[in-house]
Image 1 (tube, rainbow, N blue to C red):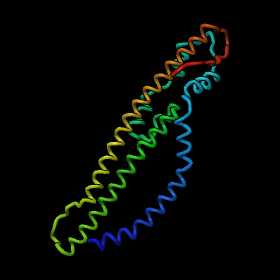
Image 2: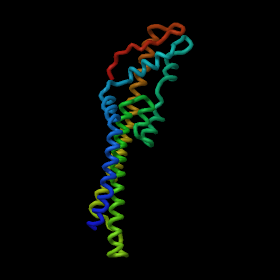
Image 3: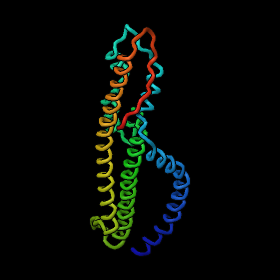
Image 4: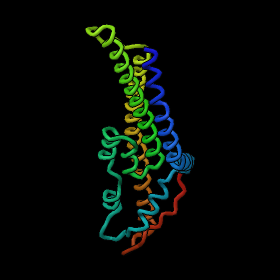
Length: 208
């Protein structure tokens, strides 16, 4: 048993280390970008500003009609957050921070589950190999190494489930705030000036 584990480690450790080095190099810029996004200001005002700068408010279109046309639809992105994950729902509504949080949350959970499954596979192969020599008819009994892998699979699944729930809730919270602010801005500008083809200029100072 010890010889088999030694052989497996000799074969696997260099491969894992090599993969880790390339992964760290590739992810370095992504980590930097993630930190920058998480430390940046809330982008909702800027998004509203950019979106409304492309629109015009005319006498033929009421503020409520314009709001209904431009507001965020949240059920589709929420479904993506719940069933696809990895920040896809947040990305659909322009929530960069939510996208980063969702991607890293699901990534950590999936990584833990994959490593745990890999450990269970190694445990099964090693135990069954030894038993096939000593006790050909014996059933597989998971060792401590395999049980650790099983715990990692369970924890990884729990992290992914929690990440999906948080991401889905964030889509509704972030999107509702955006829509509420959008309605306010449209009505504020409509009450000040409502002339044919009057451009809506979003000059906003709003605390989220």
